[in-house]
Length: 264
Image (cartoon, rainbow, N blue to C red; front, side):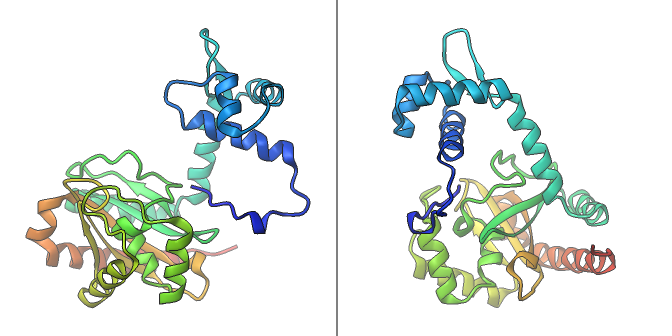
């Protein structure tokens, strides 16, 4: 989710580009497709302006017109997503470590970092014993307060930085267990630091638990890396010590591979 601050709007903002992106977002958020008039209302644009924008987006392949006159996301968006995944993807040697870790314990593993000030999933490897969570893909930047991976990254910020982050991003209640009070989250993150592993149980998805540790700390937030894994909720309570040991060992292996990887 992109948070736009009116006070930070650039003086040379190109309105047509900004409007086209708003149209694309509106179409992408609809599962049933939207008519031009519906898009116009959602984007607070005139019908004529929306018509010109949607025709351009359709020509470029970013939206598709269906027989009933509604528009849905086009295949070009899929191509851009693949490029995003490739740009975020960890080095092959690190991905190999993640695959081994997922095979050893059976849980899906995730790497996360800060991108443009937001906690983002950068790499995922699926494990057969983990519940499927369709949102947790490279580029997912919501819910840092509700995921162990997000908490591991938030833990690298100062108290004031965390408060600003949460104010900007919000604290959506994904489930009835989600922590939506900043001070409650602060206490939870502190407890995670003390136990050597950030955790959450049913805070992002009912019946699912996640655990995470820090792989790499750095003065530059975008070089900070966290490692997490997801599992059925009852598994974390039964095997917390083993999961922590597994994550810490995997984090050391990843850090070693990153140190051995030449940087451009």
